[in-house]
Length: 83
Image 1 (cartoon, rainbow, N blue to C red):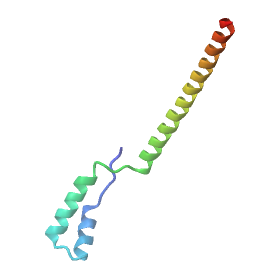
Image 2 (cartoon, rainbow, N blue to C red):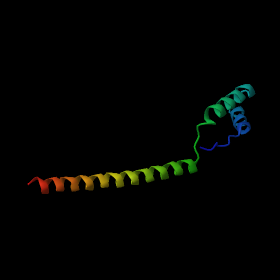
Image 3 (cartoon, rainbow, N blue to C red):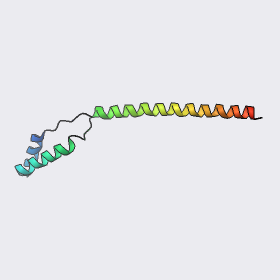
Image 4 (cartoon, one colour):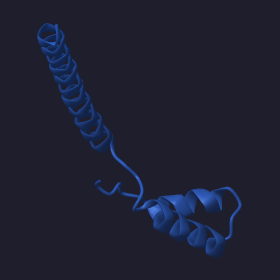
């Protein structure tokens, strides 16, 4: 996943405007940036994951269908030669 930019200065300014002291706002901004900087996903990341999951689903459907056909053929052969 790619990192999402985070403007800590703007975050500090907004906290200070809301009544935080400069020291509190700076500590909160640093903690928030550290906690979320590694975990955020962009829309492109989510689209890539969804696309991969769709491809995986298609492959599983094809494999399951092939197994059903093979089982049907096997049971037909057993039934034909069993009598």
